[in-house]
Length: 340
Image 1 (cartoon, rainbow, N blue to C red):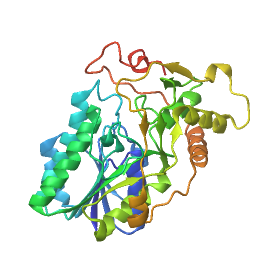
Image 2 (image 1 turned 45 degrees about the horizontal axis):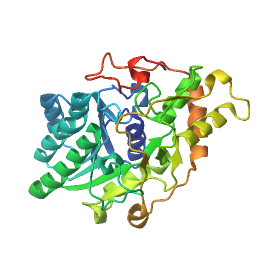
Image 3 (image 1 turned 90 degrees about the vertical axis):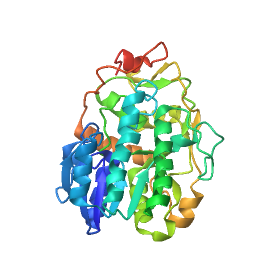
């Protein structure tokens, strides 16, 4: 098939592109390289640097390649920061998605595989299940909910197929280490590579579930090519949840491998981030039943693999925005004072 992957130079996107090419598909990829890297681009794919916020350019591109299947992964996934960059978050998520979806419909796209987020559940009782009402608590989650709702509505009017994927926190090699706003495991590892301590918000007892990349990509591909799951929404990730304190302990243990952790590299604590959901993890019974999902890489093993890759890559500087759109006393000092 002629397939388009948005966010193709990003961590999840490049892994998906590699596996689709291995399956023999014609894969086109776009990315604006704001969070992805050219080194991630598979040379067997047809890649173009493109900012999906640019409506005309995006429409022309979609009209040129006429993809049959689209995997939409491009996103500004800085959930916690979205309260301080609401316009940027909306443009890079909801509006960018519409800029892809509308011309794709015009050019007879057969199926959209939309990567959403479990942030749409908000702070409801865990584990989250797909039949729960979406109750977003931040700007990022509002955008993801709007993307899902727009997909539902437009598919009914224009008769294309779709599947919606809500991943857990995916991590692994090739993840962006330079982002100070998201991807807690990557942030912790890059702090240590830079000989800096990392910071934990609040008491560190927030609970999350984490997916190693090898336990994510195969199932988004299965969802794309199994017509029996058209119109379905899936949580993808392990059922085991961990606190951020536990994540920090595993990262330190795997990074130093039995050696004593230097005092200056032990974590420090900061006030909680505004509106941060305390517990966010899901049931994956639906994915187990319909997609054959199972976790194969335990958390500690996955973190060890990521650290091994990161040490070979070496430390990278964190890249901050020049300024936030909004800021007040609740703005995390890591961002305001560039602490890492």
